[in-house]
Every structure is written in structure tokens, then in C-alpha cells.
Image (tube, rainbow, N blue to C red):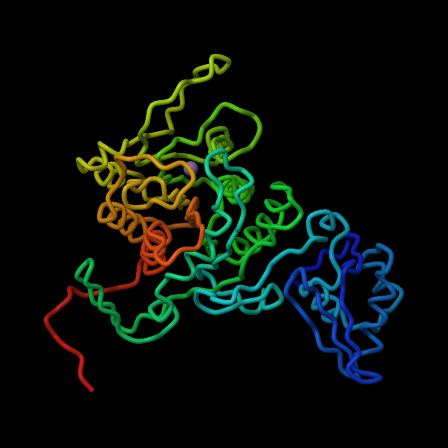
Length: 410
Ligand SMILES: [Mn+2]
């Protein structure tokens, strides 16, 4: 059947559906947890009623249609995509909600039901994950997505026309980046695995359409769920990870301190590059030391000596990479708003140069910017830096000329 509805999976009406009767025949259905609604007109009201009655107790689309051979299956797909009916299996993590639209989208505002029609390969699809459940340091990363969206240059990323880039002396003619925003994953329910399952559902769909997730954290734990979806595709890829910390803790309990564990263990992940590491840590005496030849580490000190760039230049370019940027990679004297700050990190200039190199020279299958924290303030330096780094990602491969002394006049 069409995208978004598995015919043999049991579906059920979403339990908290709101019905508003507009006239005797006309009504609207709202799914406040998915941020979706459908207006039901006279000609379709009996069909919608049939779906609501038919899926009041769990059944499959195949069984529903077998009893009603004349039923338009596209209406069933629409009701599944808009969350009016959901898979029984997904109910535990969808019952508290799925996606919340954001008041300040980056690029085009998409709702879940805009997919798959709106899908366009190569598009960066923003999704925020406002959680800090997986943090051991100071919390506050739940403010990350809204703090970052507040300071992204929206006119630059949503408009059309020429773009002048004084930072890297470039001129981008007629720049129209492919960027859309699905809003934030619902953080309600208090369970990281439920939030992770919602995020995984989004990432699976985005990757499935050849688009690229651009995830705004949130604590670093969320990267685990994104990487798991990338690994599930079964294709070889590499990971480029900017962080003050290695996030390879030996614990089996998922937290923001061991999110790259699955990447180390999966044969799909061919290379893991970690840039900006620093600090001194005690290794737990219960852990066993094992070799990991696919891992390369460039400390913050080495990065400042030009070694990060030369290492990236020598990485194989024949496979896609996933970029994960923990804002604490940047020096804590500059990017203060983060959970586990460390001094002696990357400068803003170096971070911009490296992310720009990555975005221009590698095929990125997705990216995240995590550990930007609140509380909301007049100037959130970490959010502002994350915003300029993610802008470099979105500018990506766009063609440019060397900046000239020309001026623009009307
Ligand atoms: Mn981290």
C-alpha cells in the first residue's frame, strides 16, 4: 500500500483524538500530540466515521479493506499519516505524542502528513529533541532546539537570491538551500527510550526518502538513536564526531557518555573520527581494554596545530559520513551554555573551518548539534555558534565564487 501505512500491522484510533463538531455533518479531528488535524467534509464524513469505528479496536488495514472493497485506501493512508490511526506496536511511545510544530521553523514548515509528498532527496530536515534526561552534568539541554532556532539566520536559509559570505570570503549566486523543519519530537512521557523511538521513526522516514536529518539537541544521548537507524540501513558509512569527550564510556546503560558504543561495535561504521577531545579521566577498573583500529582521535591541542584538517583531508571520500557536533568541543570560555564545559577547546574560527570542510568535501547522510543548553538568555553563545555551524552544513556543496569588491544597488 502507499507510503506510511503497513497493511499487515495492527492499527488503532489514537486514544486522545479531539473531535470538534463544526456543523451537524462537518467536523474536524485533531491529534494534539502530533500537531495534526483534518477537516472532514460532508462527502467524506461517512468514510471517516467508518475508519473511526473500524479501528476503535485494533485491526489491520488489510482486514479493514477486505470487508470494504470499495473503500478509498488513500483516505486510510491520510488518516495514518496524520496520526488519526496509529500502529498498535507504536502506541506505547506515540500515545503521549509524536511531533510538535515549532513557532520558528528553519526553512519550510512541514508536518508529518506533508510526507511523503513533500519529500525531496538531499533536503536537510530539521528535527529538535528538547530533552536532557541522558545528561550527567548540568541539565538544560532541553532548551537547545528553541535557543538554536532563535538565532539561526532564517532569511539566509529560507530566502532566495545571492548570498555574500564575509566570513569565508565567498559569493553564492542564487542560493536557495533545501531545508525543512518538522518541529520537535515530543519529550513528554519521561522515558528516553520513548523519545528515542519517536526520533528513530522520524529519522527512518527522512533517510528512506534520501533526505538528511539535521537534529537539534538535546543531550548527546539522542545521537545513539540516529546512528542506530543509519546502521540499520546496512550500508557502510563513517562518523565524524566533534566533542570535548569521547562518549565511549564502557557502561551498558545508554547515556550521553557512551553514545558511540554501537558505532564502535557495528561493522557498518567504517571510520570514527573524534576531534577536539581533552580533559583527563579515570577509566573504570571493570572495563577491558580492546583495540579499535577504525577510530582516530585528534585532540583539541592537535586540532589547533592543523592536524584535524590534515586528517580530514586524508579520510576516504567514497562513503557517506554522519556528523555529530557536541557544542562543548568549542572552548568553554566562548560556548558557556553547555552541560559539561571544558576549557582549552576549539576556537569558533577553527570549528567553522572544519565543519565547512566536512560539509563541502564529504557526502553527509545527516548531522546533529547537541548539548546546547539554556536557560533562555539574551545572548546564548553556544546556541549562536551552533547556529553558524549548522548553517555551514546547509550551505554545504552550494557553488560559490571568490568574494569581489562589487556592491549591490537598487
Ligand atoms: Mn558529547
